[in-house]
Amino acid sequence: MTGFTPQAADYRNRVRASFDAQAFMKTIGACIVHLAPGEVDLALDKRDDLCQQHGFLHAGVTTALLDSAAGYAAFSLFKPGEEVLTTEFKVNLLRPADGSRIVAKARVVKPGRTLTVCRSDVFAHRDGKDVMIATALLSMIAINAGSG
Amino acid sequence: MTGFTPQAADYRNRVRASFDAQAFMKTIGACIVHLAPGEVDLALDKRDDLCQQHGFLHAGVTTALLDSAAGYAAFSLFKPGEEVLTTEFKVNLLRPADGSRIVAKARVVKPGRTLTVCRSDVFAHRDGKDVMIATALLSMIAINAGSG
Amino acid sequence: MTGFTPQAADYRNRVRASFDAQAFMKTIGACIVHLAPGEVDLALDKRDDLCQQHGFLHAGVTTALLDSAAGYAAFSLFKPGEEVLTTEFKVNLLRPADGSRIVAKARVVKPGRTLTVCRSDVFAHRDGKDVMIATALLSMIAINAGSG
Amino acid sequence: MTGFTPQAADYRNRVRASFDAQAFMKTIGACIVHLAPGEVDLALDKRDDLCQQHGFLHAGVTTALLDSAAGYAAFSLFKPGEEVLTTEFKVNLLRPADGSRIVAKARVVKPGRTLTVCRSDVFAHRDGKDVMIATALLSMIAINAGSG
Image 1 (cartoon, chains in turn purple, orange, yellow, blue):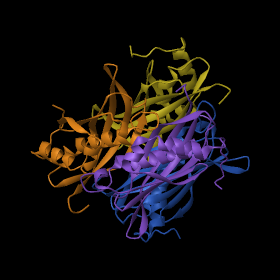
Image 2 (cartoon, each protein chain N blue to C red; image 1 turned 90 degrees about the vertical axis):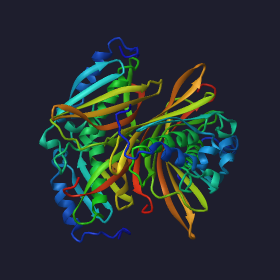
Image 3 (spheres, each protein chain N blue to C red; image 1 turned 135 degrees about the horizontal axis):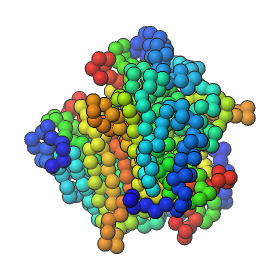
Image 4 (spheres, rainbow over the protein chains, first blue to last red; image 1 turned 30 degrees about the vertical axis):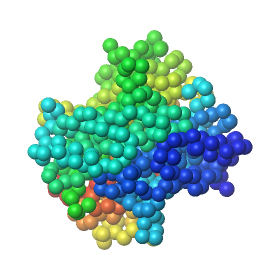
């Protein structure tokens, strides 16, 4: 129960089908670990080929994860026939992206007919606990498939 | 001539050595195509494994490119012994990231002892011309190596 | 000549009428100093009652100026019958807002049917020259009057 | 109890003294309605002279409120002798700023020696309930008084 009512009965299948079509999610090894109306968590295991010069996860990978999570959190509330595009986001990197596993937890803050605003917090699992490494605000736009 | 005076004589080597140590830049096939004091352009060729569900470059890849470009634009002005970390950024996605080649052009807007603010614009090469697909503002922090 | 073609023949009157209806612009003493398709500059004189605890212009005033400038830069390109609302913005404060006169220069970066992205740079006049004190990215949405 | 331990025993007096020195807070009629370590709420009553062209509170006023709230939330955790400056913020405007009373609730997300990241949510009281009209992320920097 998230307080949001999905407008497409098959929203879970729609999110999973779209996620599976994101080649870059496969490239970085991301998977869906939570899916509910207006809520999506994505996770990946840290790998050397995803890191920057200090051995931390590259901010681009963190952003890919938090952006896709937010996109699908918004998309889960969209009407049949609508597609989702990110229009903008802001990310604050709070701590180095260090840890064996990274999880982005996205929640819809304000659904809308055109624009949906989401928050996405990213956690790294290290030393047996989860540490918040980034927080973001994002805007998603609903477009009619074929008209985009 | 960019109006900025580098504080480290070997700034070019420092930027290239750090860039070469970014495994994720290799993963996405990015390379440095311009380097001057306070200015770095990075480019990559679009590949299927870097795309999202509509066949456009994933926003995470666009962000990786514009963030690394801005980080090195800032880093080119840092003192010897200083390292660079991104503290935050804001990206507006203006058009779908479509095109055969993507270039992020980062410029220092305001250098500082602690914080350096950069702008980073991203262009896609398509139909024989360059189209701006994203614009970003980023904050970079200088940290003393070993103290971070 | 700005490269943009206004869609409303009387765009100048529309911008001025809307600006005159903004009570808060009067409160802070702002006025239009430049108006062209996709471009608006607003200025105000620094006053003690607009400052924060260090005697600099409050960031809220700087933001009011840069936001209204961007809103009208976007609005100047809108169709008759459309109104403008800000959906989000990001401001980097580069230097203290000190100086006798403050000018926000807003330019449309990417016009759109629904969303228009603007940049807005703010300058303070001090010691006989203009110093950039803030830079911002903003998203404006076109809504049909009465439907908003 | 907020989970944060203030480093200055007289943090409450320091926040109040600095707030009282913000002339612009008087101009817009803002007051402190909650103050705890890492937490500040500011409120104001809507007035016609603070509005934009549609009769809603101007985004600059909303921003002034949420920015000052966040600045003092951060400042409440600073060491004696440190001052606070905003370096950047991002605001998503979720709904029109309509209502008789507006409250900005700022919370420190991540304290730091140099940078402190805050979240600030703004609520409008209307029709007997509180509606979230804006959400923001902000970065605050600690500077030594006199060295700024």
